[in-house]
Image 1 (cartoon, rainbow, N blue to C red):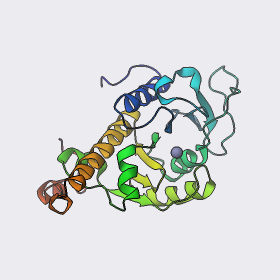
Image 2 (image 1 turned 180 degrees about the vertical axis):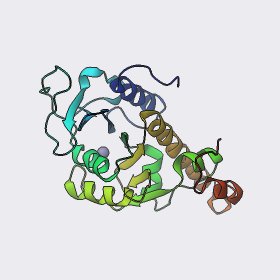
Image 3 (image 1 turned 90 degrees about the vertical axis):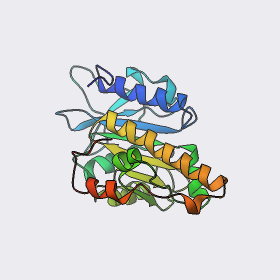
Length: 224
Ligand SMILES: [Zn+2]
């Protein structure tokens, strides 16, 4: 394990910096969270945070069960407001006890494909391994409980990658690192799909070979 040492907030700050640097999103296009071990609480980005300028002070601890401010250790609940997408994050943690990190981004290529009515193709073994399958959540107003409930219901079957139509994506993981890798692979798959579309060759873009997909079924031992 050589990801990011230290606090979960440091890991989430790394995700935010990386996805902006890599051109996935503009500076404030999304929000991040992680489940705090042994607590009924998550760290979530504060409202209005720039993703490439996150630090330990730009995360808010909130209770998973009711979304109220949480006290962690000897610290009193902070006075900053959590992200407006807090209901989305909490609904996903409640629906998926196996999930410890939620990355919600507004990735440009995935959204362009959605607006064009195209789905993201699973092209490489990396895409197949990290994404498995991608579901699209029909449009609902951002920040609302309807979007949160619908997305959580669609993730309840174990789907870890969801496109929120005309809005963004939600990527889940049992660790911040896995959710980060899924987010990067989702946008890479979207970019390859778009490049094939722009070249007029989308109908020739073949999916990852069945032989590899078959090995992934029911197995976590496959490596890429
Ligand atoms: Zn959003």
